[in-house]
Each structure stands twice: as C-alpha cells, then as structure tokens.
Length: 157
Image (spheres, one colour):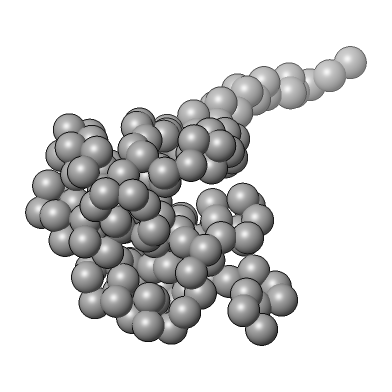
C-alpha cells in the first residue's frame, strides 16, 4: 500500500526551433571563358552561395552588378573589351556594397597591387580548389579584405 502518490512530472518543453539560416551570399561570376563561369557557378552553388548572374566581360559585369547588387563579385582580370582592372571602379560605383574578389591566372605582384588599388577586397589566383575559393569568399564577406590566396605550389615559381 502506497501512502503517497508519486507526483507526475510534466514533460519538458520542446527545444526552441533553430534560428533561421542566414540568407545565402549572393554572387556574380565574371569571366570571359564560359567553362570557368559554369564551373564556378556549380562549385559556389554546391557550397551554399546564390549565384545570381554571370558576365563575360567588364561592360556586362557593370550592368549585372547594378541590377543585382550582389554581396560578392568574382572578377577575372584579363578579358576582351573592358578588362577587370578597368571595370572594377565602375562595378563598385554601380554596386557600392559589393565586395569584389579578383579571380585571375595572373599571379604577378603588380597585378595584385593594381587590383587592390582599384578597389578589390581580395585576390585569388586561378588553380585554387573550389573549396578554398568558397572559404575565402566567406571570409571576405564577413571580414572584409583578406590576403591573397594562391594554389600550392605557388604559381610562377
């Protein structure tokens, strides 16, 4: 015989829902080679970015940057017509909150300096893995300017 009843405990409240995921970073890819643009689009989308547009030259990059106002612009330097260095200040005027990350096969120090002087937030030498590119873009989006990223071994010696 029980003299006291065991007090029934209420079940614990359910855990709060997780906070909503931050919106995907919006990116424009600018390169004159269609295969590079497609590869970068696939790699960045797989890494959680929202590739909102791409462009094949500097003139088109200025237009799509103004239309889409992306968080990040991945910009090749050497393109026919208006190249990346010449387009960069105009891209930033069209989309002032965007951060431009130069993505070029040119590893020359003078090109890096010219890109940074023109307003680029970062510089990635082509040949870096898509995973490292995605990591670098996240760092640029959250931290601002960061040091250049080069493939290993370093391009050009």
